[in-house]
Length: 293
Ligand code: SF4
Image (cartoon, rainbow, N blue to C red; front, top):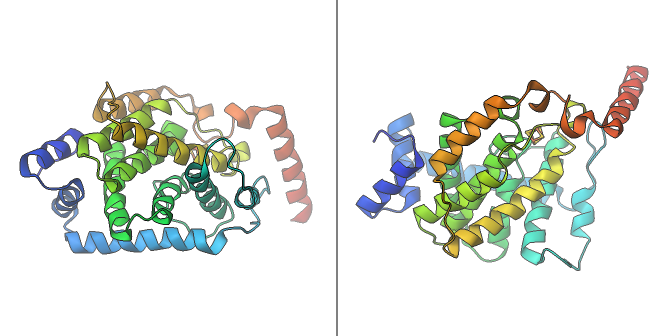
């Protein structure tokens, strides 16, 4: 099975009648030598780490290096009205911010696909669990998310330093949207549509962490990613298709990533990192750090 495109996974599912997660496990075995049981047990372990990372840190004020974030998830947990986004979406955003703040405070997380974007996929999957989706279904959805990430890594990148934040939050959103569709019984084509809609919407997103620290704007972008993933999963389940297929969207993202200047690829020199406020925060932090050392 010489697979490296999502369309090939869809074709195999259509030819064999096998579900997408099983085809992905077979692909993984041929590619890495790991048996489907081994990959499933590793994926189950990662799901548990995601869950623990949320359960251990939810509702807490966390201390991060620069202190630009750490209490946002707590504020979100204490906010009840869900006036605009609705309970499920706000729940996913809250979980995403909890895990992203845990990452910023050096707690244990699953890099999915990276530390900076680690809140998006669990934000969506743990929300589905809270609303009754069985854990095994979510583990198989995480297998599917892994396949989307793997294909992006083959043809583009998952690194903000290489391709900007479209590669981190964009990829995480595509993985989460595809996983949600799979968990809800959508077809492989619907999985690819949800992922493509996500990547297209975040295409060109720059990597501009203030001071180079993964706090601002990273943490709140995880909330945006989880929210968009749920929206595009619903749209794909409703039958909305991506006019441009996922594989071509990934190629386009690769080209956009290669065009991004260095200042917008995790150097902390462009985007919001170059604003007067960001510069004065980092100046003050540097002075304080020098005095303390
Ligand atoms: S802004 Fe850069 S460091 Fe922050 S999440 Fe996005 S890619 Fe990662």
